[in-house]
Image (tube, rainbow, N blue to C red):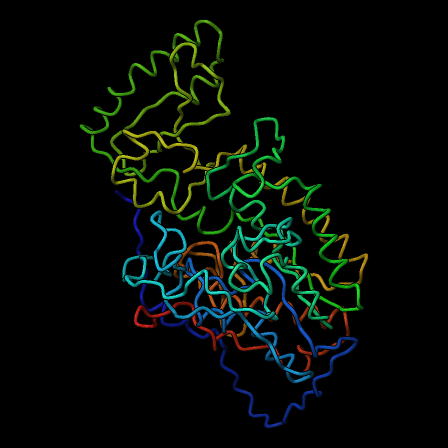
Amino acid sequence: MKTKYIWLLAVLLGFTACNSDDDSTSTEEVILPPLTAGEVDFSNYVAVGASFTAGFSDGALFIATQNNSFPNILSMQFAMLGDGSFSQPLMNDNIGGLLFNGVQMPDGSFGPRLYFNGSGPAVLPATPTTEAYNVLGGTFNNVGVPGAKSFHLGIEGYGFANPYFGRMASNPMASMIGDAVSQNPTFFTLSEIGGNDVLSYATSGGTGVDQTGNYNPATYGNNDITDPVVFGVSFNASVDALIANGAKGVVTNVPYIASLPHFTTVPYNPIPLNAGTAAQLNAGYAQYNGGLTLALSYNLIDADEFAYRSIEFEASENNSMVLIDEDLTDLSALGIPSYRQSTSLDLFVLPLASLIPQGYGTQIPLADKWALTPEEQQNITIATDAYNATIEAVANANGLALVDFKGILIQASTVGVTSGDFILTTDLVTGGLVSLDGIHLTSRGYAVMANEMMSAIDATYGSNFVASGNLVDCGDYPTNYSPTLQ
């Protein structure tokens, strides 16, 4: 297999400073203005959101990343202007994951965090100690719940469906927004709402939306993309509840999640083959190719689709993979499956990397769950654009600060985001911004996010975190955690 993780361990230990030498001999002291709050009362800050708000990183939630979550980082800066009290529903350990009546989930979900084993991400060989059914009680300033979608925020009893909220909910029938509003916040962040509304569809390879782009409300809560109308109602209701008593706040838009390394690390052509193996594979697909020739002769497909669907391997380091594409013409009446080989327009989920040496993509055509075809990517883009239109309109109508998280991720995935002495990218492991799961941010990434929020607060409400020199130094926050941290 050609595709494998090739990482530089030195990069994980820190990035090289990008400072340029200054030969100036000036000793003039720069005097910064004192920190001011502008129009904001930061005395009671409440954060509402999903996994990013919670501090989820490296595939799990654990104490170290909760302490380095962007809401906790913000609370420490806000403490210079307000009360400073900020409570979080901390896990029991730095292993991550949950137990359910003392037992781990057999499917591996809610498992321990990932760590870097010298060649790539690996699951920490440890057992979680946080019991999902041990309810913490009370209320918490950080109402960040991994897995929460937009329409989950107002659902009473949501803790029965989501164990992360179940262990922190004020009572069994509480809702996320209800617990947030009950604290009468003076300031709030409402972040990454809409991300999970497309993420589960993307990580499952695109399920839940039919070929006409129609939404199926019966599957909400599973892998469907949330209808933008449903999103709009939910987002408006959440903001209305949070501002009802005059609170000010920050919202973020939704990035194009298909640019995250979970979907960009596995290339479309990772199969190395010698002449003999290529010939054997071609023989295996000869009957399939013959069926396509018959379909062409009956005018069931045209010449372009015939070429697009034909399977051919060669002696090369870069063979494409065979996948199942439901958007192809249905030839099942002739016994012809919907196969084609991958192109540069396809994306593949990160877990596929370990299965390619087992014949996935060659002898075993890739099922829908492993790939995002261009049509599926377009479904995500259309929904994301609709969500962002709603978020921007609501922010403008209510005078809220808005962070362009979409733009930040686009920049990180192209030229990189400069923060202090560092240039952060979305490259898996080495980029510094995105954690080992390929989706959630590193602690350094959450520090960057906190700085972007403070900049937006300055621009909207007249505070001066930037001008007074009170942004955080992202170099103080790690990009990875040792496996010995448990």
